[in-house]
Amino acid sequence: MRKPRGPKPKLIQLTDRQRKILEQIIRRAQSAQCMVTRSKIILMADEGLHNQYIADDLGIHIQTPRRWRNRCAEAAARLKELEAELEDKVLAPHIEDVLSDEPRSGRPATFEPEQICQIIALACEPPEASDRPVTHWTHAELADEVIKRNIVESISSRSVGRFLKGREPETASQPLLVEP
Image 1 (tube, rainbow, N blue to C red):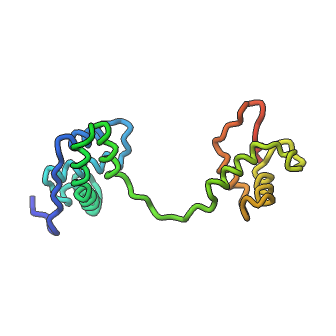
Image 2: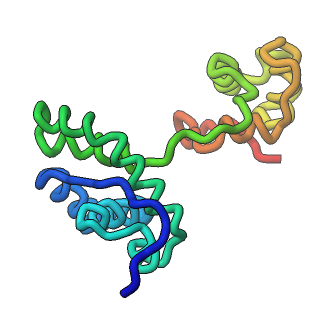
């Protein structure tokens, strides 16, 4: 086996408790595969394996073990402090947090939570109270009424439908919406 090229990777030194928690993540049936892979990376790094060996063994890009080794090294001091204070059941979510994806940037929300609540509240009102000539709200009728009441400047019927999706009527005999 030839010596890998590149800079020497950051040293990872797990405690027995941290190793035990990572092994539990790997064995758990409901663990996300990304968490399992990241746990394996950290355990292999703790064994002193180079990033290239880890990447080859797990069939992943070389940057992946480098990234998670660095994240783990950055969190090591904080995890040791927490370990001194917490039991395993409380420590495990902190370790999982280190292995979790960081929030991604993206388009900011178009509608405020208060506006969404007002839309849902409007859907609970009878359409007749808004002088609508229908017996049940449709997404299009709700969108028109939301704009008319100046809850939002503009909204599509599809957006209204997404906000209401999954909301079950109070009783099966009183449907809230009629799909167009």
